[in-house]
Image (cartoon, rainbow, N blue to C red; front, side, top):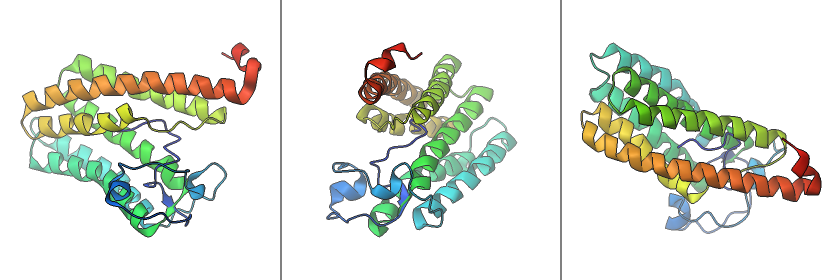
Length: 231
């Protein structure tokens, strides 16, 4: 799921460059092991390096989002095999570019910035479709959309202040149920989608609280007592 737009600088899914390689265990390949320093190529000030295999996957994901929207709104009720499949392809593409980056060692600043933006666009697209066709409870979709807008604003503010927020575990765990809720709703399993949305929303809200607390600590650490006077 989309997290702060500055991305996760420690996430090797963010493509380009060639930092020192660590043993590619199953835990690292799958993204379960995110220990160690952030790849230098993903950090602030590094070249964007757009033409990498993981970034090409990201570009394809971005291009498929409007295709998904056209397919969904061309259907009778927003559900069906085509929109559900397109949504799943874009969603799972996030893991595909992560595996590609870890295997090739192609990390980049553009990947670190682009991945969370694509995830957020996909979530907003899912919210729009499920809201319009009433596939999921609108109040929960409204809370989720508000959370995404809040994280966008907070992420941009943190970026301007030189703070880079790392994706926390509640945020990582929220991805599957939130994305799954849209998929199952569009696949005709609305009850399953509803339960997954509630679970994902709870995790996402917890993640947001932790981001705010972490960002405040980093601002105080970076700026000292002067940060107390900042809005």
